[in-house]
Length: 124
Image (cartoon, rainbow, N blue to C red):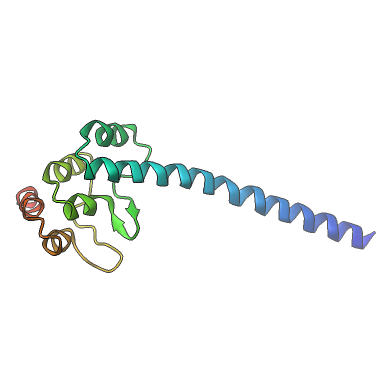
């Protein structure tokens, strides 16, 4: 009897862990897909897509992708209008990437002069 109960409890525990771990994964994959769409919109100057995703509030504008905050992709790709749009929707201009680079440093390393100028103007 004890052995059957142990197996039953072990099975229920494994089932519980399996069900609980699959739920966040699904929601994370949806958020990851939206972040990728947002970054592609930034790169392509697709204001309708970017603003639509930001207005939907389905993702945090200060989210990270591949170790960089979303706004860093606007800096790297020299998209000053996108920097402004992200800022208007609450993007934090003090965010750093996982290796410690600031948005200004990303702009400088990418030779994104217009993006750097926009950051300076917004912060002043």
